[in-house]
Image 1 (cartoon, rainbow, N blue to C red):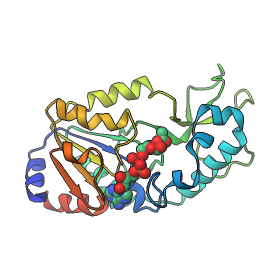
Image 2: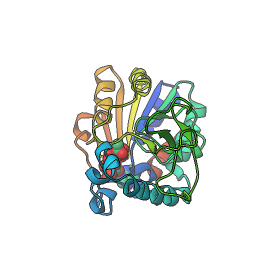
Image 3: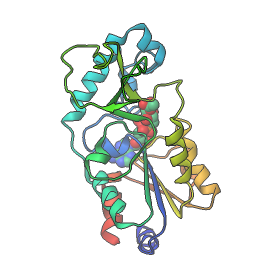
Image 4: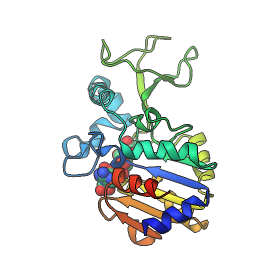
Length: 243
Ligand code: OAD
């Protein structure tokens, strides 16, 4: 099966990929929904919604400050590396990620479409006139929580998409463009969170050959052309070695 897929990939098809927390699992980044998942220990509604932030910005920032600290020590794994290599090898390769951890970028993947934003970006809560719409900030840890906008002294917020918020229009446009491809991979995602989970089905409806890589079956598995069960870092490495 992997041989056939590799043979197909050798013909330089247009490839699009969506990744989720499972691609970072081997780097030691906790996923959201597994047995040790973040949402087992923390309630999303008290940490990852605009309402939670308005209620208690300090608590929300303490959580993000902690996650930034944890992530700053993590390194890309073989799954990130293979995808970064493919982004250089294939002439039409697009990578959409739901991950906010920045590991695809650190592995060297260019033009990552950050569907849920980035934990390394921040923006002024009031979107004050003096500040850019969002900016990169790798301060770890922040000396003061909650951190302040360097332009107006008000609050800043993490540049991530919270529950109840929409996807950035530009990001959505780029993601929809990525659906017109020959092979669409969905890797390390539970395929439960919409609209991200809809993308693979839309790609299939547009004619793409759809491949899932996940350690377990997901609601998408049976509807796709090929569901490969196993760790992303191992399966991607094996496909890559067959190319
Ligand atoms: P989940 O935690 O929901 O799912 C992670 C998936 O990775 C599961 O299906 C696991 O089986 C799989 N997995 C674990 N280890 C793996 C490995 N080594 N190789 C392959 N697969 C593996 O994470 P996401 O699907 O990314 O949203 O979650 C989607 C969104 O929900 C996140 O972006 C986040 C969260 O709430 C926001 O922050 C907006």
